[in-house]
Image (cartoon, rainbow, N blue to C red; front, side, top):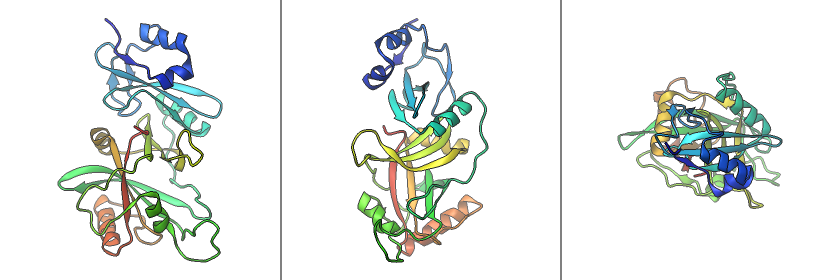
Length: 260
């Protein structure tokens, strides 16, 4: 049977016409695969399958995904993220650690959870710095975290009653069923760059991953330091989000998966 494999022009440019031809002929494509997004099994002879090329600083890894989960594309990642993805694809899942990265002098804490909005569960990431975030070049001691995000296109919320609009150019990198990064447009043009990235790929629940693949997007909520805190349960996290929104201390955006 013919293989229902999608190789985008972007992927073809990276791997070359010869390798693309071998893939399409079935010579180097798998008989079956674990989707790099939803982690369930796929079969390129039975269903449309996307080739997804993860490109690091020194190496590249070709993975496969259901076309309904991800389109064929090239995803730029750091070498550390790529090695983590290779381990996860190979079944050696690294232990998750605190999801933080320094923006200036602050550190961002990221928590995943499901948000119930208008009767439907949506995958969500909640971002809160561990200290005030000053505007670059500012000598003051104020907290400009929310104004900076609003300038980027995030929407201020007073309540969690509707899904926030999509923030174009931003995306959430979910690879090998784990959370790797939040990507933002590159000011210099070209491929997106990491706004936040995990030290190691972060585990998400099956329910979170299923909701992400259902909606093909993730909701990102952000609040200034001290607004949310570390909440041990999703109901407590939701209460904290509602309180932050009511106090005018919450912004949000919807982001597609992996830059689609």
